[in-house]
Picture (spheres, rainbow, N blue to C red):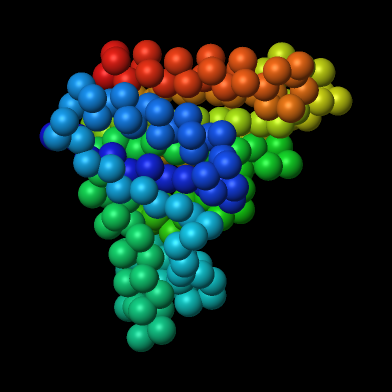
Amino acid sequence: MTNALHINASARGKSSDSRSIATTFLDALAVQDPSLTVDTLDLFEERLPDFGTAAAGAKLAVFTGQEQTLEQGRAWDQAREVFDRFAAADLYVLSIPIWNSGIPYILKQWIDLVTQPGWAFEFDPAKGYSGLLAGKRAVTVYTSGVHSPGVPLEFGADFATPFVEDWLRFVGIDSVAEIRYAPTVLTPDPSVGLAVAQERARELAAGF
């Protein structure tokens, strides 16, 4: 049985290309794995708790072995609820439109909530950081209106992909497959590129 968490970082609802491609992958995967369960987390639709002063203080208290205040404890518990939903899955599918060369701010907020010491990673003064989510898998779906790999810098840059790849490695997820649809606007017929990405999604599901 596979428990998938679809983390949708697009603000475009049903019009989202990255969401559509991710859904194609999950639908194809469900055909060959009827026991598949999918939890969809629409980051722009669900209210995420803030990770502000109290939460930052709670995190520092964990790092330094100090006791959290009541306010810090409440903030920590709220972050833990988000993490537990994350940790319950063994397959992550991330829909990531590239915004201003990076990831949407709401995805960064979610990452900052779940990436906590003792939950997603641990630290050893001699060996450094190590991820605690080994054995899980991820599929990343990137879309971009103008930028695509190999284009001149005048057409934009991509800091989203290396950031997400490094974060997945940081928390211990090293089995990662990628689907990309870009550019989505600078092409005579955008439907052609979308169809290629959808087919890539189906082929990837068939090989899982």
